[in-house]
Length: 557
Figure 1 (spheres, rainbow, N blue to C red):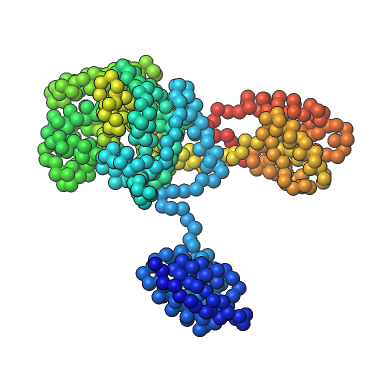
Figure 2 (tube, one colour; figure 1 turned 90 degrees about the vertical axis):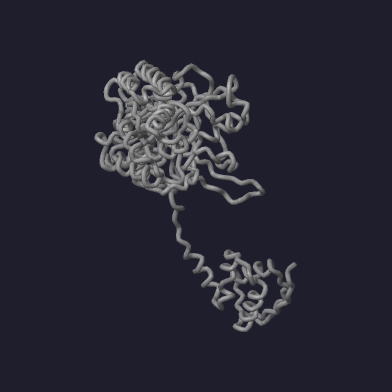
């Protein structure tokens, strides 16, 4: 229980207050002093400081301490305000704000991706941004150290979601769903080392597409590859290749090369670095840090350098004839599945962008079958995007749902899944770089018509016309000034790429007409006031019909 004390504090205004001060009321009175015009004498400040020290011994409520700093240190309230103003405004590490131009680019990219997902019959869901910590535990292998843990809240240990896949599996198990085709676009969080150049952040969006349910071998898997190829082609971000491999092929390679079973995942995580790290460095990590036999590492090298060139099915046949991994029972079955996948990719018209690559070893623990990763090919990119690398990845995870519900782990009730996750932040980085290099002006609004006035006191007429246009679902703006200057209104239209402007004038309104201006050409025509909505709709149809299929709405400088 707090010690109660009585302190008499004299003020410069020649009267006194008696305060009954407790641990908490001291904060309250101290804060009120800092924000009042009451000035304390030096003696009163000393008494207050001594009382503070007695009452607050061992306490560490810094925010309240800052609010009473002026009284404790013997400074004036102005100093406390100045201290508060020293706060450095910045984003947390690994996060960023997005200005309107960047958001316009993002909206176009999201629309392209969502349209493709819907083209393939997907429905969408959403899950909480945080999960119970136990939900995420033991799902990500070595990457588990990147999970953001939250402070204990009411007895629940929580973590921010690391990806959208594990929450999806939890959702399926919790709701007893055994069949769904879903997409999910949302933010995820990782305690990674941020790199703006590589499009790597601690808070970022993922765009996921997954198919859950029991289907024939490789039918759903092949459609995932097709969807990924469609999206990357429509975004037009450069040449790309979709690398594919099989988790069982990886395990067969490990076993036949002599890697101990307990080291499979650790060695796979090293192999997974080959897309950005030279083999010698990867080998050193295997041998020196993970203590793999050097001879075993050398045998692994013979395979991880292999990838299909040209006909991928012939490449699989070549591996089946290999005296080492071609003789592994599980490996043989996986190779046959890969041949089936590649034949389906040929039917879907995407075989030219698919490569069977034995160095692909995605690090997440939950993959059980096909794995794939889309990477940009540097020879088609500018220097600013060459380092972006992997832009999407995924695979088959047949047992993840069963980890949350044992009844859904095996047999007829199991829920096998396959999906892809698009690293949208890296794509944004490329799109923004292209935008800057092309010097295109990106439209940040979709306004189609601007209602302007040439004289003063026409705001009633502008408002009436805006209402008519809004009722007709025409995207419309006007100035919020009652008597705006015409030049400023027209400059606004040019700055924001608004295609049409209606100019109201007193003489025109008396004759029941208005001027309709093409902002880009600056040509004007007189239109009857009662026909303006009809004429604008026709104009917009023509404008929209002439617009390009570019992924970014642009106007020329």
